[in-house]
Image (spheres, helix red, strand yellow):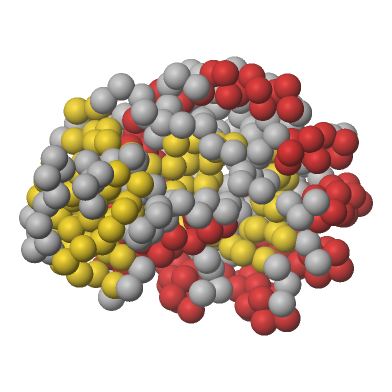
Length: 445
């Protein structure tokens, strides 16, 4: 213990064995011991006693659109990672689209990393993209360290990232399976979307009708069939349709290698509360009804849905018009995700241990980040210090992401992040940030 540099002490530390009073010893950015609360502080170590605030592992958000370079006016690494740090997130994995160029070749990945290198306040990894014409690029990207490959089964909304047809999906998934990779999928069927009524305009009910549940359900069923045929590993992004849950549960019971995420906006916002013209609530697939939300929470509790991530997908404010058909589809949620989920989770009888499992432990496991996601010996000393009973009202002006458009404006949320720590260094406390400390992560073979 003579090399311990820092001891973080709390009456409530969330560990894999449960919540307990403890002192967490840190050396060279790594957790070296989880000791009894009243353990002595080694000579030369600094003590940080956070009292009754909860010490939890930094969150790992595996679904973030940073858009840098190319659409940096939408969001950049500097602003996105500050927003993440302010919300208790210490690791994010960046999506391959909405930046220019998209992360679909090794050269493009190199460009992305060069931009991110000196701007990241937290650790950042990267997804690659699977396009109709880049099967040849998938293995090189995998070898270059991307965590997996994003594909759309319906139009993505940006021309430079076309979606996969079923034959193209089969080819890409076969290639990814050949080297043991992971395919993560925006699962909406384009034919069901084309057949749905498309009225446009400001009415949220019309937008909801234009993205029906059966578009998700059909795409997920086809993805399951492909994964089963190839024994491939697949992940369903941003699940919103509760109707797909029986399909997913059955596939898991059969041994299909499928995992599933949902998002804070599906768990905390409902179609019934979305005002007409309020496209800050627009995302694809859409926010659905409260009864649907109840079933998503049940699926989280029983493990059918594995984890919760933001799908932070910002744009400039001018793209959020009052016409739901033409407005940009995406919700900005990095800074507020922990508080939003915790507010609703506690109302439904869940504890912070559940939230940590959904938003840190399982997300870290999804991408193979064995040093993240838990407070235990050998993990990175990444922490969030949370006052779970304190509340705040969301003020867009207080948000760190570049365009301060939020579906949570005016909402009162529980859970104030007091400080965030990355590898044993405090990177934000009470709104004060250090210089960027983040590292660029690669998949561990």
